[in-house]
Length: 519
Ligand code: ADP
Ligand code: MG
Picture 1 (cartoon, rainbow, N blue to C red):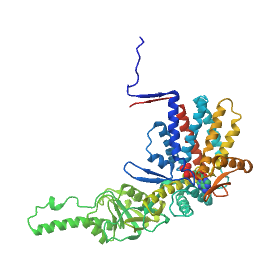
Picture 2: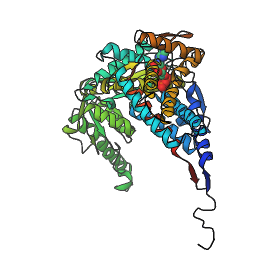
Picture 3: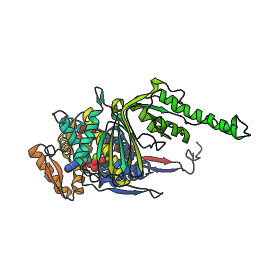
Picture 4: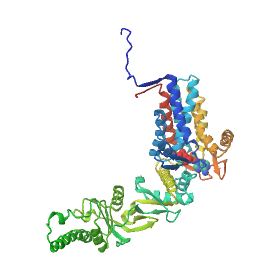
């Protein structure tokens, strides 16, 4: 080719190759994982994240932290995706998964330094991951996943979370009650559970509402605030004059004509209330506006009406009560109506909330939790959602395993036992995987203020003699013991997903030896 250099990349693009690419990707991935490490476990600390705009989020939740950090490095982003996948698939274990991914990278870096080929590392990691899955399967407790087990799973997932001053035990009861309520033959209908938190009002109470709660207030003060055996309509329109008849139809020249125009308007507005009353509607949710006079007529008919109802609220009311959303009051007919045993409005501080409970509406449940401040309720909401997810996972997806690091100790031990029979350098990668898994009990120990090496030694020797060993967090410190006896249980699905997504991300990063980025 005549010795002319050929440029295939834009002049502005940047390229990092070989060892440099690996080192920088691994460093980025490790850094991300490092950033959530201190939050792992019941004694994990919280993080305060402050956005450009000054918004503050205080959380212990791995997925939330990584999301709020707005990470840009592409390899680092892959660790963020590990947490997101974990959150989407099983709803908990996000810190576990990202810490594991980071440690797999760290171990891989050492192997690369020792000239183990990336492909060998990838193969060894995949083989070890399979051994880990087998070990998790073996660790699944035999006993039925009964209510008592579910309560333990719920409580385990909330220990150490900022759940305000509400007792974890009470929260666990509410969570399990909610999941059991929506359990069908085909499994748990998780979508039928909503978490609603409310700041202020009477503090620290959680209750299970069999129905939906929406943040809406009555359109008129004379409306009833409570209705029994409620017939419910949802209307996606305004309740207002079609067009102002004063402007449109009359050229007003005297007072009589004005009166006539006004009474034509009043009649039109009253028509809405009459139409709804004829259908025996007790409660109407309107996504548009309700004209003041129309609201007064509705009040006179004893109809409880809400205006400017958000689309999400309209959707959940319709689906909970069996109502169909009508395009207008005129379009409404009997088939469109939903029902509930009760609808009522309650005041909490400055907010008013509408509760639609019982009857058809009771197919959906709402976990209603209150806390002192917004930061508390936000974190409480995350903890409750995680907990609902793990209880769902425990019921629907393959049982429970001991928590507190016990499953990880067993995984590492079983991988090491099998590694001996694996030939060549791949054995090193398999062993490195086991060492990486150790990071989880080590981190639990460190976050409890214990020496991680001593703790690991104690855990292994207890595992040797008892066949099970976890690091139980008790008060200020941790003790080695049997997590089952302490009721510390995690869903098997959370561990399985963590192994899978962490392995996937780490091996993907290890395989990259060329980074080409456009400016
Ligand atoms: P993740 O985001 O991975 O769920 P968490 O901070 O929720 O991280 O910590 C989960 C780990 O904490 C699990 O391994 C669980 O078994 C463990 N854990 C929960 N409660 C206790 C406890 N009382 N003692 C020891 N470990 C616990
Ligand atoms: Mg958790």
